[in-house]
Length: 199
Image 1 (spheres, rainbow, N blue to C red):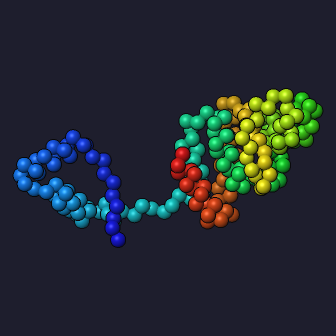
Image 2: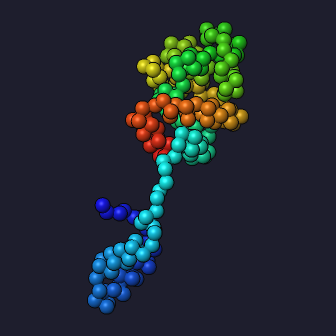
């Protein structure tokens, strides 16, 4: 088995080193290969244990820390979209996310009353609406243009997010993502880890 290592190299220094070797009729590749071999054999870098893979809670914190630079709307449209499409929220929760606590929204758009979004995300608006509901809105820009698919059904995700919503969204993710990892298939877990580590 061949060990693979990565080094940061000062290109100017490497070029000077190569020129010096050529002047002394040495072969740079051979010398560099010997230096690397000696480095690996004479240090414990090659034997370092990378440690265990990060667990669900650690992966959740990695995700949140890597997304700190995202504006809250961007955070929802990228991260919550991925989590919802992956099944992090069960069908009962998805049904609650379609409700609203703002009376104007309920009366005008015929949405059921519910406190889930207000209690969990500090928003009176529905987090998700169907295509049919979106067509009734006089301000459709309040929901994302591109639909997402959850349990085989298409929804539009709210775009009504403000700085004060962020902590609530992060808390929801901390409460739900680690639990999802415990029941997800190996393929789903691998896909989510790749998504998290690519942020």
